[in-house]
Image 1 (cartoon, one colour):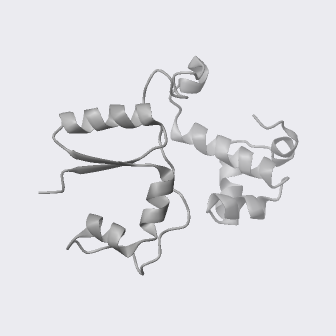
Image 2 (cartoon, helix red, strand yellow):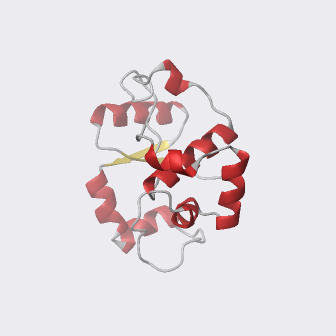
Length: 147
């Protein structure tokens, strides 16, 4: 059976208390840290050891990861999701999202498809195929205004 612990890193005290009451309602042990406390703690081996215990780690080395994670906002009435327009909330297909990402990358790199392909993590030939598949005109994507 897995651990029954929830770790929350949050600077908003109200959101932290909401998450704490939610987690405790599920029978979880909830630990809340501010971003400063968490950053300092991740640099301290004793702090990290309290979370890993005897569990094998998938990370190599003892240095913390320098790059942050993509974090989803905690749902609530004040979240950015509730302030979005109905069109922005619409669920889009993977093809639509991929097409938008390709257009944004082409615009970002001023029409340089090789650099856009690198930024998207795909090969140049794959990008050319997808540009043709989605009928994207690189010269128009290059000139368009950022959405």
